[in-house]
Image 1: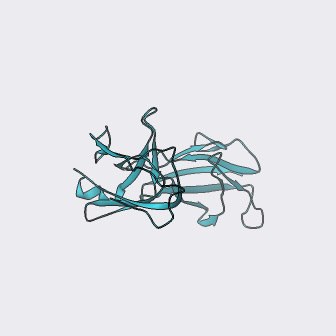
Image 2: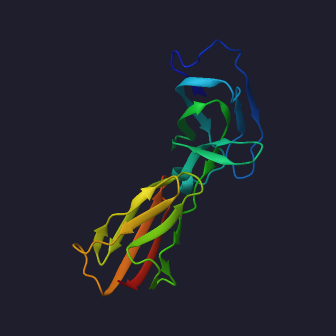
Image 3: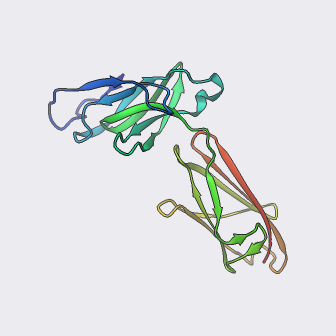
Length: 194
């Protein structure tokens, strides 16, 4: 079901819709909604009925836009309710229901072997999430919250050591937690001397 507010389209059109069998890793048929090259002036609300999702993971369901040439999934901010997954789409295209059960990935760039510091003035990590996207980043060092700057474009997070907040020349314990939009969480722990 698609709902478009008034003045969503730039021109009148002959609306095309097709429903194709579900693709691998999808929990609904593939809904081909008009033509991706036709722009939307305002977001449209799309609801797709989910099929065969275990009740334990319905909170991980989301709409995805699918590039049928590459097979790539692009997440749409969406939610599950009463068997339907609903979200606002910014373009026509190919949509289906998928689930995100994988936690974000954390790759250390400044710590080797969870103990050796490779950069003196900062801690850097590359973080990524395959589908729904990063929601939160929480860093704790020696039991205190630490600020990580997030550059979404490069997928890098950076913490610059602060001598005013942390005693230097000692062993430090770092706990870094990264969560995605569907509640999947990954934690990285390391002890290092700085």
